[in-house]
Image (tube, rainbow, N blue to C red; front, side, top):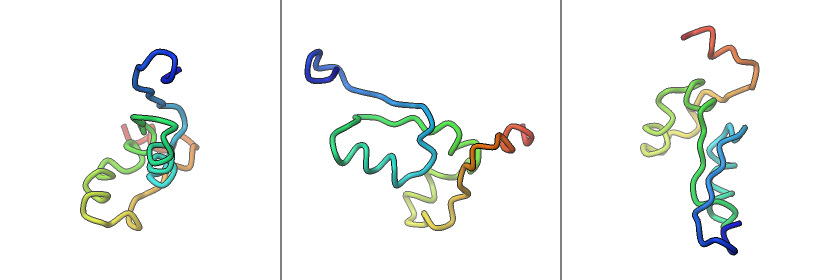
Length: 70
């Protein structure tokens, strides 16, 4: 799509970890990644990435337990 339209590509379905998002962007598959479930599992995900604390990120396991906390 991007090659034909020159539009940026965005994907927001079931990318639940930073490594997958980083790989998709680094390899040119995507320009932006939405990580809603990852943010619900760990609301501090961005801060932890910026501070080099990715090992502390609470992962999304896809079981919707995070919805129980809302």
